[in-house]
Image (cartoon, rainbow, N blue to C red; front, top):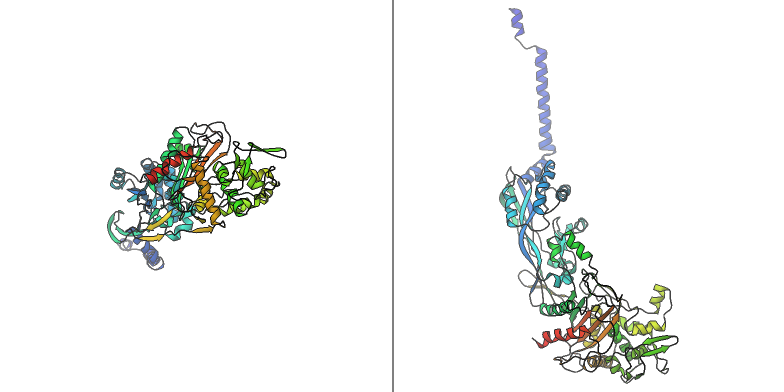
Length: 625
């Protein structure tokens, strides 16, 4: 009995063990509660708050790009963007989610997974865009309705950049694209986020600061299933400014139509057309053809499309109006002309008797395209006599009394007119061109300058190379009475309400150190080119003045990527239009047209397609208003 009774009680040692265990458990629980609430309380409260409340950026629309009359050149179309918030996706489910999203978004699963993983390291609470372009409404609804299959996925409204005339304006406008990791590091402080687009080329890049809007923010409350319950706060986004250009869409399309027609007719393989207002440097049109469709890069260019563009030997990605250089041919006779006049080595009455189309200097022969007979300054320029300008620049054995201007003066006046340096136009990738002189040749080739170099320079061949814009700007300075303006495409910036926030004022590069009389004589000679000289225009409706040029450049054999013959010669016509048929500096427009592979020889009766294009465009634009 006693034995049984004593066995029914818990032994003291066992009781003590249980009590000790309970005490230990209480200590552990107390320590854990202390850690959760006191030591790391703020951190865990923040995590809980992040799970319940999320701050989401509200994207801002990019500003439009307009022509001078308000015609829209770049706009935005509504769509839906797909993003992922990494904190809402367990790491173990990253790959599975990427595999499900990839075919819907047209991407590789690994690239989607990598984007999510990278954002998890950077900021797991901030969404990362995984769609390369806006998705359709049907896909947006699918992702929203099957949230259990797509954890962490967000579908938000976003806009798609659209260029209404892609190939026509791509060399000017460029395109936008996703921001890179390196760019993000430099621009995060300016408010850029991981899924931002940024101007990659052209005016989209140059005026990114005007076009880009300002993000807003939306704070939302979520339930335990991470579903949005309500909006707690909203800071609206602010759209970017609308950039209005100096470009006239009507003139742009007139030039493009003429150049495209010439390419289709095999008159030439490529072409450039640029128009400027000589009074202020405003670019009225700038066409470089063939071009590319910048919409391809915005919607997501495919590998075959990119390969076709990069493999085109016509270099369609280059804006040849500013980004490539060419020998200017006889259009460059402007330089020895003003140099000789201003340095006093020639006057309008300086006559050279061109009795042969060959000028012998020592053992070397230098050619003219025909026998001109005696010509004075105006007619030497009008009929584009090479021997006349050889004589002005480097001398003539048959005229030992004549003092040539020399290569140093040629370089001096060439640089004064803007050759050999970028114009500073508001476009990326502008080439400087080449304005050689004896020191330049010695430094580059370790060879002395020769008389042949001077002669070649005088007629725009040899080492001389210019961009079409440089050539146009030089003639614009002659047309306006001696002011070299910095060409520009920006006219003004408008806020979303239409108020002007920025106005581009004309910027003078320099005043030409050339007398008014000599500038007037050059305008007279340029007018004679069209009335009696090298580029007589039939049945003119306007008093066009200008200068032709034909330059040898590259091989005269083979074909380009489009199957067009490479003829090895290019044609120029640079022109301006005074208000009246006189020599006053009243021109409101100057234009250069440059055609590739369009002539095999230089002769007065050879058809320079640039002349006819210029006449048709200017008459349609000015006389046809």
